[in-house]
Image 1: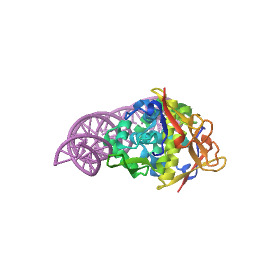
Image 2: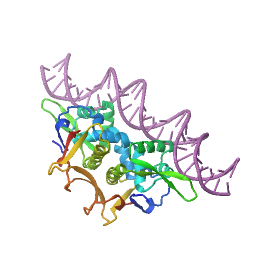
Image 3: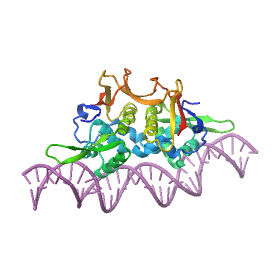
Image 4: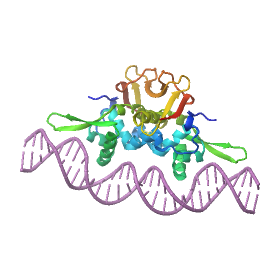
Length: 158
Length: 158
DNA sequence: GGCCTGACTATGGATTACACAAGTCAGGTT
DNA sequence: AACCTGACTTGTGTAATCCATAGTCAGGCC
């Protein structure tokens, strides 16, 4: 047997049946599981907030950016907040909601994996401002133990 | 100013320019950034190894599964290993490479976020086999500090 | 009133992802 | 030799995603 997670209960005995929307991961992918949405989130984490910044920095057309941003707002990942610069009218900027901030492990996880396993083309250094050590994305438990792959127990719930 | 990561160096002063393949995250997305690939990885983490299991449990057609599995093998995320069951000929099963195992934080991160922020439709309980506490995906540094969003420093490198 | 800028909207076409159905192929079983 | 099974391949159609270009719209500024 190869290393894997421990799957229990109805999930373990389901046979060769697709989970569809019963899997939280599939629902996540429906909301943010496309290139543009994830790159928009990268730029928001990097500090961009305005529509013009976002579509230019992601390298996508305005139409696509507008569509994806609307979806992200509808999904509760981003919200539009009014702002104004001196001598300008009131506009709206896109900021992360608490749910959006909770996506940081996913975004940084994708970044870190690519930096390690797809290094050709230029990378990034991710460090902890406090101590300068490298930033990692780790799996652990609420009691602060490191959790290895074989120690993860997954069971259907709800 | 809103909360964000600290972006430094060339990355901070790039203006409204797209990063393209210079960003490790974009390279990651090119390799595994589609629904089918990520769901195949979910099933492999759940313990499935055989082609028939994989396409049926992911809920995708054989053609798509074959295509994505080939890409995952070419990307170095999965590898094919020979196996045989009694009274059967030798076949191949798909197992995670070390690079594939390193995707666990991403897969579990997507699962955890959906369980928390898209709970309608049924969820999963993820617990630590050792202590029963809930499994989380956390951002921290090599010196074991928790790293909050504003403490992450990102700079171009390579 | 007319100009300008940031934030979109609209239209058309290319590419990618996926579905459905059917066929191939290797090799072990009978 | 005929059959079966797991692992694919082939062929065709649809939908989602994306690109390129152009147009709209609101409101501050001149």
